[in-house]
Image 1 (cartoon, rainbow over the protein chains, first blue to last red):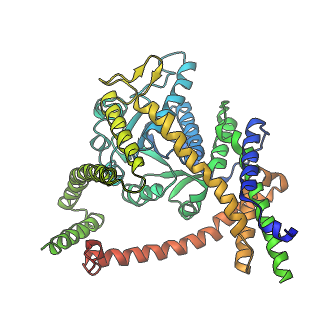
Image 2 (image 1 turned 120 degrees about the vertical axis):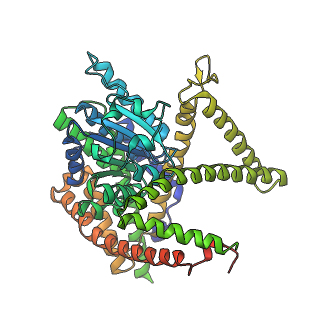
Image 3 (image 1 turned 30 degrees about the vertical axis):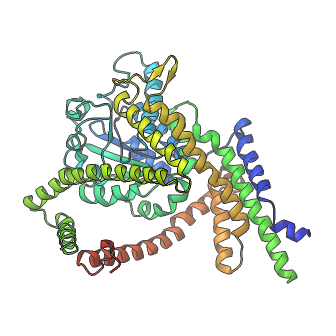
Length: 287
Length: 219
């Protein structure tokens, strides 16, 4: 086989093997990466950071195992941020599949704080500092219904407690008591929050999305309908960087650790595109 | 009647869906709240039961007829019943009436989800990276000026968003962000307007009964 033909016909197994190597090796031997924080993430951080004491934050965990590597680090970082600032947090899902992942995120973050806590006031307590509302189908019901009454939509929380008996829910009645809603989703759910919750009730929305779906959300950031936008694992790494820089939060950075793998995987894909194009042009010139 | 009644229902609810956004009258708002909070929930519950029933019927039928790949239907049916029983009676983290632990081996619904569904789902999606690499190598060609522009923009954004971009030049991440903030937004907004107007026209056609293909029957 001629050299030009080889350039345009690399066996897919070689591509797979190389991609696997450049993804796995940086995880085993990490290289420190400097993270530059971009304005969409900083906006989201500031929106969460400035939530007033009497208002709450809603985090809509709507990612599935498929998008978990990109979106879970955002959820963890936001919970850490909110609990550090003692912001009241309501967690919910619009679909059934993410419930287990939202539960896993809470199971990881709450003990992190409680293991360090020295008193009841320092601790993160269910019902006082946060509530896991669970899931109510179809998505339109909670999105619109929470504008009138959160406890009417979620009569029981994820664990079966009556929500109107929980301490936190006595002060957080509807969107009027919510300063920011963050939707972590790989789909178009953040746009539904804008269309229904924001247009009708004026609630501020920010979102965390996967890299491939980011293009759909930039127009909403530019128009101010999104108060912040976190894109993919790089965006999550930027949020972790801000947590460390501004709140001196030193913990394992899940997204930051993966940046080397992402860098090398992107470079490998670009290299193959360049090789393919060189072969293509050489072939065309020959014809 | 079989076709007229659904059309009337759709027209009524279609118009009623629009009204609360324009009329703040308490009667309209109250009715809207009833439809959303009560009626929609009841319909959803029925739809859920109907969906699960239909899924099971389909797979039992496949098993009965030994249709193509019928052994997989057994897997679906068995896992459906096992997870349903554990989920219904075992509680979320194993605090229900059904014991969900044998010695140090837990099998509550959260453990099953985290240990089986999460790795399976993540693996399926992770495979995409390999297919994408192979596909972009084969298909991403600078055949025309437009394709070259697209390729160049993709390269700038890919390098710009990575930490490497900042090392190459401090201006590169800002340039990548500019591509996302302006040319991308301009294109997306144009597409968005087109989709919205097309959607609006289709919705009106459905509400007014001009578009009836959703009724089925091939008419």
